[in-house]
Amino acid sequence: MNIKYIELKTGYNDDGPAWIGNVKESKSGKTVYFNDHAFQRCSSRGVTGIGGNYYDLETSEKYWISGVKKNGCDRHWLGHGKVIIDRKVIDEYLAITKSKSLNESHFDIQDIDDVFPIERIHAILNEQNE
Image (cartoon, rainbow, N blue to C red; front, side, top):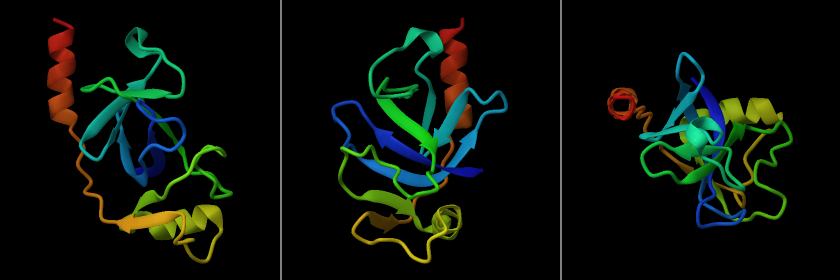
């Protein structure tokens, strides 16, 4: 597992709900799992759109998913709103950003369950390919 920045883009500009937490990637690297969701790159299966680089396989909502930035500025410079950060990844995040503490005006610390719906998504993808 590694940590990523995930932001919902559908229905928002640069201020959608955003998280930093553990993700799991498929062996092929095509699918990213986070918080009981599965995402694939927007170029997959003809899904395109402005703003998002991934889409939710079950809802088709667009998301921006990236590695966390070393400078700690993960949101678009026009974006605003607190980012939810999983309590489990704070030490790793601080190491990546070379920070001593979180700026509490930018983050909301929560517990995010590491739920990766691999079997459910495999079943959906297998149905689509039949």
